Image 1 (cartoon, one colour):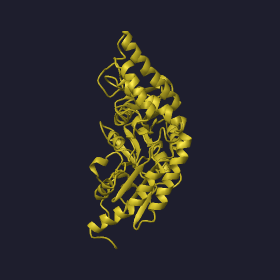
Image 2: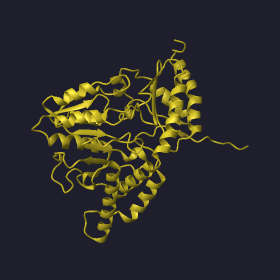
Image 3: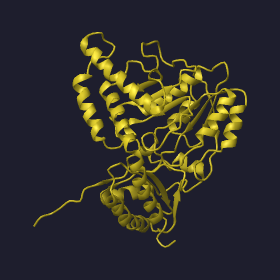
Image 4: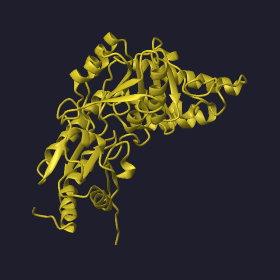
Length: 380
């Protein structure tokens, strides 16, 4: 008798997607050609420097920036921490207040209240969209050093009013940091930013690298001790940076086709899940990322539900996208005023198929029912 094992379904691709094939190929090539220190003057160092310069040029072109405005960092978190610290330090004379949306990544929220900075948090509505008027008003008041607003929320998918807030920030003379970690490579990112951070792991590039771009007009001061790499002491992995750039070019080349395909899959998920009893499907239904969906179940323990789905061969996320290892209640969902427990978050990769979504939708209602039964709350 022949036994077959069904392959696992990975639907937790936000921030750490499977390698894009061309990104993997680029990484392997750069291991041979870019292993040396790009700051060295010998031939090996010059080859590594050429790869790193080409990677910066490619990412800059994708962002509508100049090559010298782009640097690679060790991670997306490092990009966000450095962006907040460096841009705020450059405006110490203007003030120390950092205006942030309540659903920003934990890295931004923590950095905005660190090192003598004053964090000013702006509320969001039930879709997760920041209160545009309140944010613009906060920027107009004296003492604002920096604004921070994600392009889209990686947990619920909702797009933010970046263009309008950027206009208000520009009128107030305040630079704006746009976190494009969940959106670059998946959705068009407007050029209405002064500082931008992006995450190559989210589009299938090599892990261990982040993207940070600062317009030349932005005053900044390095938060680190003196080093030749003022914003990135010690430099970064050249193979990882090269992989990030090649992967970004690859996903942008077929982004429109992937958008339509994944948006249709997400709409199927949102529509089907809404029929499960006592569920809340969250995030803006229209102005959203094409590949992210989040929903929460009443009377369900999130950790138990993840384990139940994992036994069925389906990997999903839960809790906050940036602190999910702790399985603490999501600060994003809490800020939105929606159900926080029994949460499932999915982020579809380019390799996600109709069959993968079919399996999730076939298994999910039974998994929810079993968790409720184990807790003795079925039929409430």
